Image (cartoon, rainbow, N blue to C red; front, side):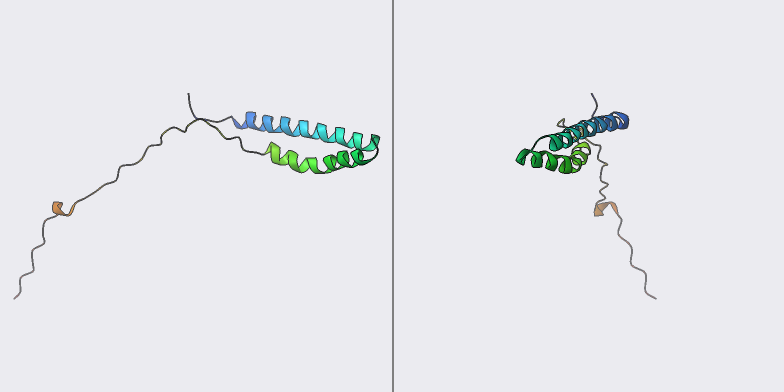
Length: 94
């Protein structure tokens, strides 16, 4: 099993379905706001007005994967100790 996520096409389709469902609910709210009377009409009108914002946020929400991520490769560090170098000789004085 790999840690690869959804393909872009599948992710886009899932977002479109979420958005479509939210817009259907918005249309129902709009129709009900025109049909019912009283405070309930205001609730449905508020739903019809505010739902597009929440629909976009919901559709674009990033799905987190609860699966543990695979270990990544780490490059080894090169360590050179000072005893591997020879001492430089002092230049002779004339």
